[in-house]
Length: 462
Image (cartoon, rainbow, N blue to C red; front, side):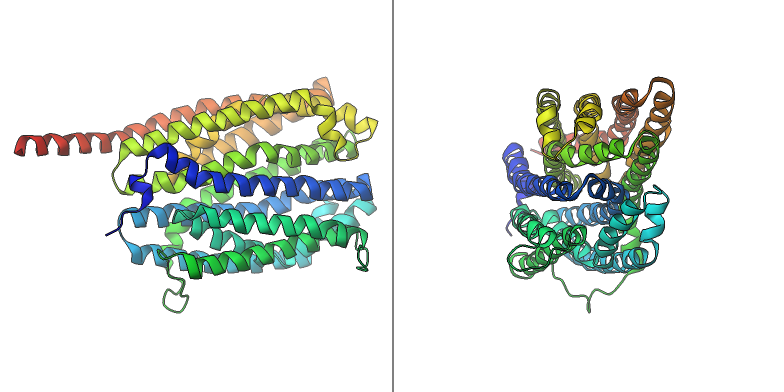
């Protein structure tokens, strides 16, 4: 019987082969994030602010998609490591059904609550109208992005990350191409403004979801997609969400944090909120490759945990940490050296440059610590400890970042607000290290002991 590469291939080669396609596809995604906002910024600063204020709701959508995917990914890879293909199929099919339900829920939100969401942040009528138009389209057709998440996570969990590179890359490229056509009305297409940006986004997601579905049907022999055979199963759903809900909550907390930061910044000027939105677009170019490598790492960790191979598990984590911290260091240098050029991409006014320069530089000080934290937290998630990631995220964003940002803004002004980011990441580092030591002692060290005892018994018999 052919062995799965996640259990036998040299770890460095395996991590690179699993991660590189994901890193490339996520770099394309990050490029899309920047290009999309760059086109919107050509409309007006208010349009850019509207898209920035829509981010918490879009981030919530992504939170549900990625969090559910963490549960699906970890359980499928672990089941395959245990050679339990039937359970892997059950998890995959139930995961897709959960994504369909998620799309319906967000469509209801978009239809009835988009306007309320924006009016809760600003009283500027133009920003409210622009934002509502943009967010309503993204939410009503959110089933596309959820199905893209579902099919791609199944490919990732079975080690077929090359295909996810193609699906994500194609979706992002189509999005980039359609953006100027639909926003500005090129080639005879009517100019749709900010609505065009939303339609381009959804169209790219539809194309990516269709291609990912086709790859699973034609190229993925490890998983059988058959909703009739694998109907919604309570135990499978509970297992997915036992790992996924903490991740969903963790990412959702990011939406709360962003919403809160926007309220703090809007007390100064709407330009500050636009700068914060620009930062999220730019930082994705740094974080997305790390998340791509992270997505390649998680199934390797899960598989080798299930296969009782602790050496490969730890080697994978250490290599991922080294690569992540290297990428984050480069990101910090870029944010300090090329600050004005980065802001210039978004047609920045002098006021935006004055606010954005210290913002990007101060926030980027947190990157190096974030790289370490991301890998350690994801390792614990792959081992089924999703609550740890939730605990760290709540502490970092709600108990440290937002209160410090509010206090600093009131005492020392706008520029000091950004210092809350590195301070919060430093606090998260301390908590992450504490939890990882406990997980290592209780989950990983016993496997080393088990392997050592087995090898000793084999030598005694020989």
